[in-house]
Amino acid sequence: MATIAVVDDEDNIRETVAFALRREGYEAIMFRDGMEAWEGFQERLPTLAILDIMMPRMDGLELCRKLRARSETLPIIFLTSRDEELDRILGLELGADDYLCKPFSMRELIARVKVLLRRLSLSQEPRTKESEEAPLRSGPLELDLHRYLVKWNGKPVDLTVTEFMMLHSLVRHPGHVKSRKQLTKEGYSHDTYVSDRTIDSHIKRLRRKFEEVDPAFAAIETVYGVGYRWVSAA
Image 1 (tube, rainbow, N blue to C red):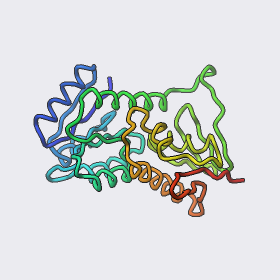
Image 2: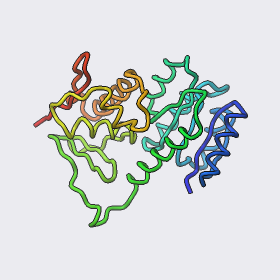
Image 3: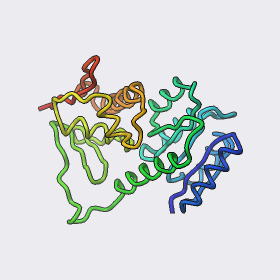
């Protein structure tokens, strides 16, 4: 059973979300702020975390930063008010997979939780002869499509599942320009209202992760006014 942490200082939201998750068969644990959650996570991390941004003691951005320092694969969803565009973008650059604006549909939240858990499950499945699939290669890049693993020059690059989906979209069509709308369909197939800035934030984080492994990394090109493309390296 997946354990989902709901971290929100609003009692009504926290309890309503937890109730909906339990009705779907998940174990839901609740925390009133980021500090309380972080202390609880010292014993064990949840399977997925739903974080409010604006909270006392420790906000969602700081908690996301701490969680990412411990795990790049833990799915994280932000809950944010509509006037918190900057915070939302900062959260995605810190490594959140998704976000929902308040007020939100509980059905939509559950749908997004299921998408992220399904991707996480696929990435953790052991290989079998039936599921064996050759990695996708492009120069120094290697993508394991079954386990959501990435290597550059043989060195692992830790990506969130959303980042992996966007990278795969670029790499499978090297040289072709992918618009932000196309990348949205890859990373957020359940949501056609993701802003261009959201996609830009994920691309920025992707580049940063590859540059940490290889400072000369330049395989993701920006085509101004259009989108991005993958430049196949020898």
